[in-house]
Image (cartoon, rainbow, N blue to C red; front, side):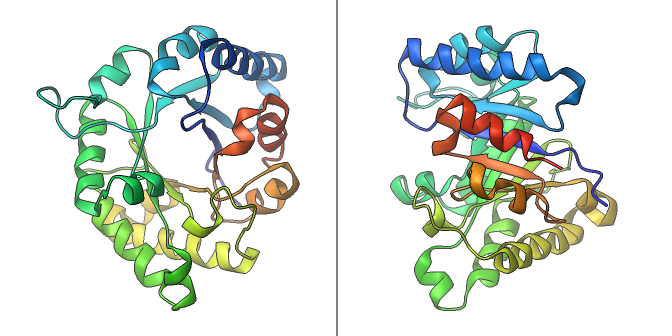
Length: 254
């Protein structure tokens, strides 16, 4: 029986102007407040940098946490266009996503870069959501386990714990495509991640570590995915941009 409280995290990506973002955050916050103690999961929204302060105000005093979508490995300096982890914390963030496949692909981020960002996030008091996952070509070549395990060990800092780190498995070919792996494929990768985590965090640390599934989770498949032993929530993309869809996923938590 799972003892880890699920985390349903919304990654808004590069979407939303102020009015849209505030309305979305207020809608999620209202649902969570109405649910009260019946809420079976932790909720997190990760808006674009421009919306973080407004969203943090919109959800203040309630159970919805706020996170950033990325941070720089350095604490300050000549890094035009980047944001330090402490800056995220300063405007109300408790979490930050690092190593999302879109960052790895679009910005060439390596496991070493992701590792350094996770270190910076933890040093600033933030929980790092470390993303790992294989491409379609890697899956078709039968390299899923090898690739995902390699990314896990390469991206996970030595100081990582279940308290300051969350892992998100996101098969790259399933993000935003509507495609998802079979239940058996998801279960296999998540079980492998937990087994590899035991090598780094010990048995107790691995049991406590949250491993999210990210890759076209939506209301229609959330219940089945979230029922799996080693799936501890979801990193939600498109479905997090609609209050009712995001809430339906949250309500699917066992």
